[in-house]
Length: 90
Image: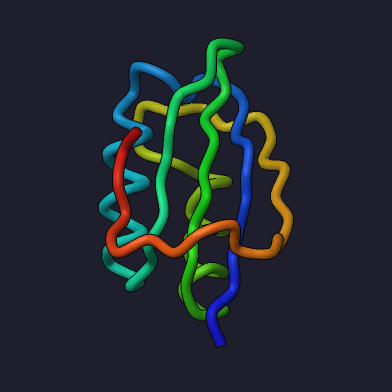
């Protein structure tokens, strides 16, 4: 069963390859959706896929890439708003 994870990641998460690393992690776990920077310095993630892959991505978001310093991840399972065919940076 496909589920949807919506997450906001705060800390030092922009300008440190966070979006690209999120894309690669999501693709590794067979997820679709998107990641984007927000004007307030956070990163927003919407990921669709099976529970195992979403749990793997959620765990990775709390660590991030090497140059990142993640302060907080706020995430929730939500109803999918639309279907995605790939994971992308928007």
